[in-house]
Each structure stands twice: as structure tokens, then as C-alpha cells.
Length: 311
Image 1 (tube, rainbow, N blue to C red):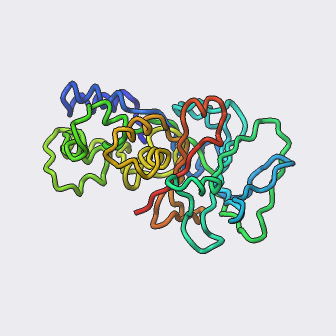
Image 2 (cartoon, rainbow, N blue to C red; image 1 turned 60 degrees about the vertical axis):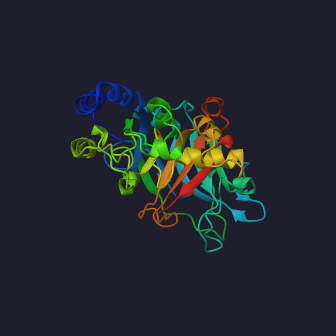
Image 3 (cartoon, one colour; image 1 turned 120 degrees about the horizontal axis):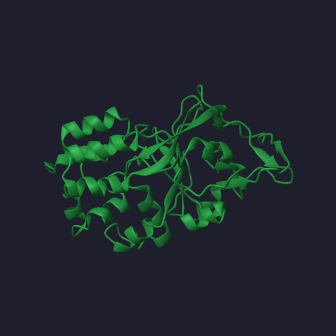
């Protein structure tokens, strides 16, 4: 995510891409918030620690498995004050993110979008402002993560080249393999694609464009904690993972329904591996919550879907 002015990104694209490609690329930039370790700015939330839960609410748990870990608490009013997240967030209150992360069993995360039965292992809660709460003690068997204060910084995010809206904007180029060879499917949009053997001579893949993106701190390979904007996948687009989980195992990766379903979801939040918070998702991975805009606008946070990726 970049903190450079939008005009800088627009100028970058117009100088280094064809007019048509530049216009389409600019249309894909999406506002969002980077959540960084607190420095001089106002605190907008925290990783770990103990959650402030309503007085009558028990600690979230997955029946038959155990309590969920508290990953983050985010202040909606502070997030909105920080700038445009691109999301219809509540005006106030607190968003709480919980996950059954497998620590009780000594295993990795055990919640997968492809397995609907694991969905109770993830939860997003909104506690309205003015609700009587208490700092809830952690279950005896589950130590809380260390608390790390976060600030929110507004900026623009760049999608990876396989993101559903990128494919829609640049046109479906036939089957999956043909799309892999499309000029826009190049490393400035997703560092993972650099390893592909297909030669890429499109200007979007040129070293000046790649270097300029890095200088603006907007290269899509950069992860970190985020709210809104484009997700930064470790592997394939997380929207596809969620879509395939909902469509079922019969939906092949080449199924056109995947793109249609994936386009219905936006990033709510992603939490990266964080040494200070003692959070490690597999092999230096990232966890994600996606939600449909209509559910977000209606405050249906229980409809958010979780997925995670690691190297």
C-alpha cells in the first residue's frame, strides 16, 4: 500500500504504460488502511492482548474444539478518522477478530474455506459503542498473544495480476493458460509471477515500472496488516479460495463461476505474521477475512469468511 499521492501513481502509470493499459491499471487502485505498529500517530487498535467483551458474552469458542484466540481489536471511529478504508465500516464501536489457530493442539490453523464445518473456528464481532464491556480474562488453557498497539495509515493498494477485478478489467484472454501469458500478468502486480518461465516484454513488466512501484512502497508483494484495499496473497488470490470453498469441490480452477463469485468479495482485514505479537501463521503466512459489501453495510460480520496462506 502506498502513501504517495494518487497523482504520483497516475503519473507513474501514464509515463511507463500504454495509455489504454495505464487507464485500466489506474481504475484498479483501491483505498485501504495499513495497520502498523504504533509510533507517533493515534492508536487505532491492537493485536493480541485481552478483548473487551460485552458483560453477558462468553469468550468465543468452537464447540468440540476449544476457545478461539483473540487476534485483534480495532476501533472503528479511529479507523474512519485515519482516512478512506474503501469499506462501509460502522461509524463507531470495536471490531474483534478471533481464530482457532491450533495452538491448543500444537498444530497450524485449522480453519479452511473449503471445509464449511470449520467455519465456527473463525469469528468477527462488532461491539457497538456504549456497550457495557469488561476486559475478559483468557481461558486457562489459552495464553493471550502479546499486545501490540497499531496505528492506521490511509493509502492506495495495488491488486495482484490474478485478482478477479484485474482479469475483468483487462478482459478474459481465453483459458487459464492464455491468461497467464497476458501482458498485464507480470511481476509489478505480483512478485510470485516472476518465477514463471513465460517471457514478459510488456512495459508493465519493465524494470523502471517495477523499481518505481517499490520506491512508492506500493509493490503488491508487500504484505503486513491491512484493513480494506486489495488483499496481498501469499499464493493464489484469496478471493478464489473463498469462492471455491463456497462453490464446492466440483468447481475447478478453470470454472468461470469462480471469477463471478470471487468478484463478490472484498478484503475486510488481513493479519500478517508478526514477531512482536508472537503470531506465526504456518511458514510466515498471512490470515484474511473477506466479506460481501452488502453484508458489511448491514453489519453482518458473522458472514465474513476466513482463509489463510503461507509460503
